[in-house]
Image (cartoon, rainbow, N blue to C red):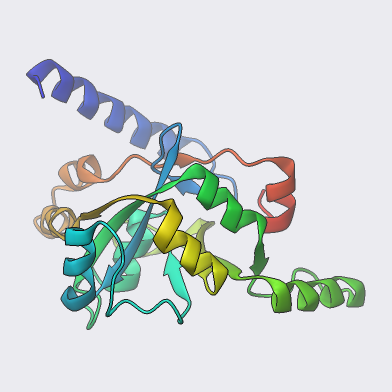
Length: 220
């Protein structure tokens, strides 16, 4: 990469961070690193699962297809969840690039993990969808660099059954070990260089959702 491209990339990242800090964030919105055809999500695993996955560019045993597996579009929420890749069985952080088509397939068939609203009619619809859906969705407080909760929500997506099969066999475009990047962010933070830490973060923008998906996810 040329010096000019590096300077431009860093300038874009800083401008994006500054803009995000000034503009109020939607309360429930998907923020992700994405291209026209892919979305990046994160998962943390033990080395025994992560290393074969990176080599094969696909999840292989001992990864289990029979358990619900949770994907997270937010790098900082992943950092919070795995303790900067220090928690047991979460020592490797993977960036998994998946197709938008697959990602939206999952969202369309998802069910909130908690009932939306208190009306009996809403609860009945939710229980039926919960029984039928292979995908769970949670909205949890987004985190900052210090893992403090922010005023807006970050999405976590749990895949089971058919959704796991499609994730493993159809949706994955690439698998990259980003444990080193996560460590670099933490080291910059520990030495008090906030600008460096922010500059290392992946650029995540609000992911566009159709009205149908917004309704399913109760996005705002």
